Image (cartoon, rainbow over all chains, first blue to last red; front, top):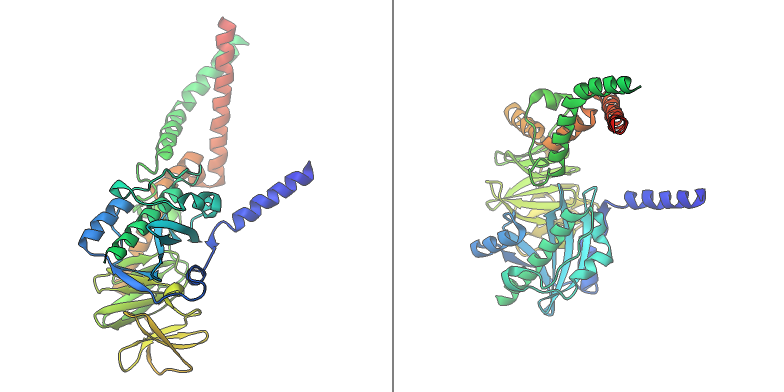
Length: 170
Length: 239
C-alpha cells in the first residue's frame, strides 16, 4: 500500500515537474512537418479586413502585423500563440486540404492547464475544418481545470484554418 | 449543558458574523475572478505593493538606438515605454534598421515600429540562430547576429540567413538608462505586478499578514465548526 502511494506521488511530482516548458522546439516542429526539408517561410500581412475577422476568432486584437507560415504546396504549417490564463501558449498547426492534420503544443508557460499537450486532447482537432462564422465543425471536449488552455487552443485552431484559407485564396 | 451551549452559540455567533460575511463575499468574488477580471486588474496602492515587495530583483538593463530605449526590468521587457514581453531572461540588444526596430532576446527577434507596434516575432523556426549573444548592423545596414556557432547576416524581409566565421558590425551595447525613463518604467513594472485576485485570495486565507493570519483564519473556521455543532445540538435539544 505504502509502496503504491509512493509510486503514485512520484508520478504526480514528475508530471508537475515536466508540466511547464518547451515540449518541442518550433524549428523541430517545422523540420518534422516537412521531413527535414522545410520550404522557405512565407508571410501573410494582417490587413484591416483580416484583423477584424481575427478579432472575432480570438476575442481580442492580434498584436502582430505579419505572420510567417510554411507552405510546400500541399500543406501549410503555422506557429501561433495565444494567452491561456496569463502567459502565451505556443502551438504548431499543420493544415492540409482546409483541414487540420496535426496539432502540437510546442511551449507551455503557465502553471496550470498543461494537459492540453496530450494527444488525447490534441487528436480531437484532427480533420476538423471551419464552418459558418469561422467556427470548428465539431465540439472540442474540455479538460477540467484546463478550461482557459482548451479555449486558447480552440481559438488558435480556428485561426490556423482561417489563415490557411486566406493564403490559399491569394 | 443547554444554557452553556446557548451561551457559546450566542457569543461565538456574534463574534464570527463579520467573518462569515467577509469570507462568503470574498469566496463568491474569487469563484468568479475570471468573469470579474480580478486576475487582470492590477493593484496600484503603494503600501500594498510595498507589502508584497513588488520590485525587480536586479537593476534595469537598457539598450538605446536612435533615441529609443529598450529596457528589461526583472522578467519584463519594455520598448519605448510599452511592455512588449513577460518572462524574458536576457535582453541582448536593439538596432534601428529601415524605419524598423529589431529587439533581440531569448533566442527571439521582435520587429517593431517606433510606436511599439509589433510587426513580427521571430524564433528558431524563422531561422534565428541558437545561442544568440549580440545584435548589431553592418555598413550596408543589414542586421547582424553573433551567436554560439558563428556570425549571421540576415535579410529580415526575405528571411535569408548567411553564416560567417566573423563579421564586423556596430554591436548594440547596454547603456545607462536615464533616470526619468527608469522611474517611469519602474512605476509601470510595479503597477502590473500584483493582481486584485491575489490580494483578495490572501485576505480570504489570512496570508496577507503572514503565517499568523493563516492561523487566525483557522481559528475562525474552528469557531464556525463550534457554531454548527452547538446550533444542531440546540435545535435537537429543543425538539
